[in-house]
Length: 237
Ligand SMILES: [Zn+2]
Image 1: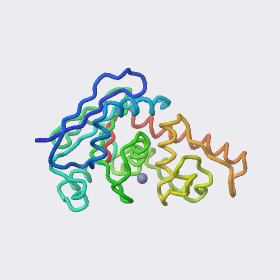
Image 2: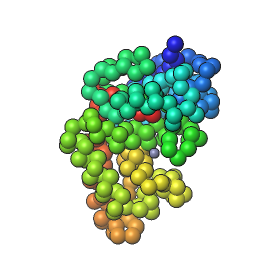
Image 3: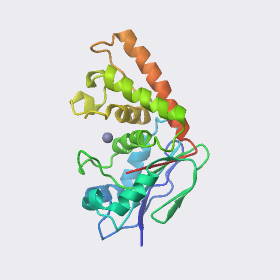
């Protein structure tokens, strides 16, 4: 019944082992170009390479659900209910669309249930998109993360949105002026995962010293968030 695109891989350290894709003709939560992308053996190599610098072991599974089409996601209540219950970070085993996921020691287990964003369905599932979505999972997790971790997320959200502008950020979305409001934290977490470090540039109110200090604190807190996710399961859409 259910179809899975699976890239189960310890992105940080392991050589390439499995790449498993079961095609689905009936339409899914990934659009055609994502399915092509995820179905391409080169993609796995690219994904793993892109996450080489992250100091965490991350295993990713893309669940492709044949009963859900990308275009239906907004209106599909079953899907929304399942995800409203499950989005976020889980300490215990969970079952999604009939597939069981178990947390693993020393590993951040990521389950991507689709590739949908408020802005557009056309953002391809690149390594950066995946990293960005991992960033969002902390913001989606207030129901099921501990208070300290939720406080870090709140602190970062407030601080980033009030103290920084996109001119303080260095990733492509910032350089091209395309960061939407509320997207800076997940972009910074993405940058941390992909480059090993979030970068803050001096601009506006931030002197070079301020920027350096901000960057140090930010990286420390992002690391804390990711440390929290180790041994747990992140579910994102
Ligand atoms: Zn986003």
